[in-house]
Image 1 (cartoon, rainbow, N blue to C red):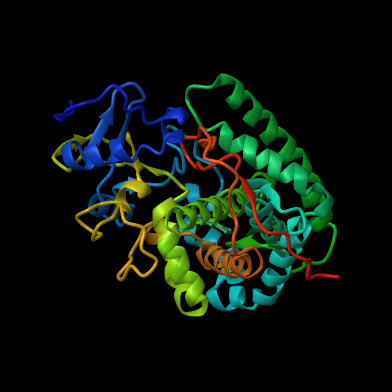
Image 2: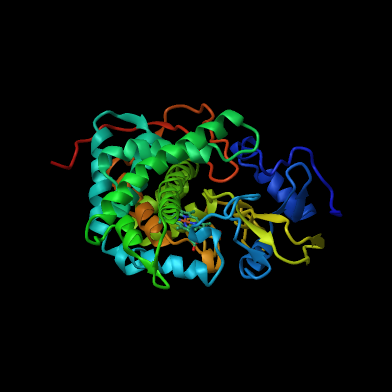
Length: 402
Ligand code: HEM
């Protein structure tokens, strides 16, 4: 039995709990119950930076075989595997995501940013989430996967429904997520059939269709799941850092002015601080493989733990003044991308997207601001959360594209 104080309002699988950005609760947990047993949902919550590192570095005792969600089923995708199987899968696609290959995309990303801003710049107002933040990562990852562009609205809808369904308390959302999963699968089977019937191409789905692990090709289910992981990893994460990063700049005008004064010199630091500040992936899970003590608690084999990255990123034992937003924070060893063998495959891509879009926004819509101070609606997901809408206004400007 756990030997720590408990609070009724801490509900680790309730999506609504995350919609309030529960930093007060995470701070309390770090101080009073850093390894916290949620009796209702039967899962441990790990909140201290060092404990999250300990678990992430020890896949032998803390396995990913049911990851990324607690109480999940083992799935045929890299995030749900341990090494060496995990690395074999990851190697099939990782060349497309190396820092150098991603840097080669800079011009393409700039063009996409301009195209997105061109669509709204003359209006003087837009919804930052749906007009700016969501389209950028979707367009980039959809193109890398090789999906047909006329299905991008569907892809966004499916991945959104799947994330909205990650909550233990909303049956309707879970039902919609199930339907979205079925529709994505049907769509993906058509793409797979098409790629298998053609010579290998450079897109990721083609790569997966023609790949071999130990002399055997991947089965359909593995290709569906890996593609879905890359789609959701790509389009459901960076968007919240764009939104949350913009909000942070608006809430800290002195930081915004410092960035505007030297975007070239300060953008990298600003992006790292936005990643730490927002941390859009709220947690990943691991399964305890043998009885082990952590943070003064006895964990039993078979139990699941949730690694709370946003909490680690505000841990006062690791960061100086963690609740201060400082674009020149140094050092800034945040854990927004996780740690260890499952360290985010798309980290370089996400960093470049954020870097280029914020530079473009500062150049082209420099006075962007919230329309009013109505509280923003947040997504009720126990996995990836952020604002569902964010009305903004700005001085209209001319498009730059053809
Ligand atoms: C700001 C944006 C992003 C954040 C905060 C983020 C965060 C994370 C985190 C925390 C993990 C670790 C999972 C674990 O340890 O269990 C992870 C893994 C992963 N991410 Fe990202 N991610 C982002 C963007 C992307 C993008 C753009 C892609 C596109 C490919 C992507 C694809 C993946 C994949 C495939 C994994 C699994 C890697 C593995 O199991 O080896 N992510 N991400």
